[in-house]
Image 1 (cartoon, protein in one colour):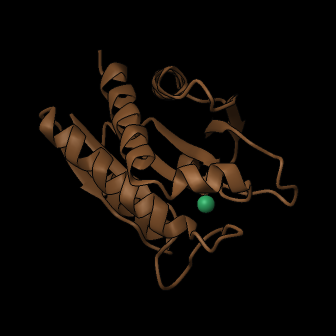
Image 2 (cartoon, rainbow, N blue to C red):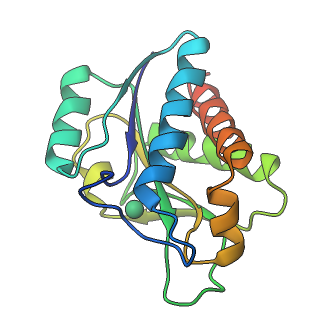
Length: 175
Ligand SMILES: [Zn+2]
């Protein structure tokens, strides 16, 4: 199947959220996104990846590619450093397949990281979930504004485990 991966923001142009220790969301998303792409390709899937500050371009490319699934990868941020955990966003009134995609990713991530609080699946009008034709979700891996989670997000082993979990979730949604 065809999967479109969109690491959020754009290194050097739009860093996204920045942690206390200087970790930039765009860089973390790029690393995890590229690893997700690699794991999916190893599993025989056709994958396109685009990280771009134009969300319009991201959605156009995904639609042109004819993606079966669209997954955007981000890090969360909040004014309070205690906010924590993992969440997945789907569009308002999501399709059955979008809900399945989000639930499969949530399940794999939560099982992989027992210390990562599960904030659940949320519905909203996010641009990339709204304007992509494919069943879509946006993953907020953890809070870059939480020093403990910022350390996880900048750890290559943690990034790799997160990428594997997201990739497993996507392939689970294909079954
Ligand atoms: Zn973001």
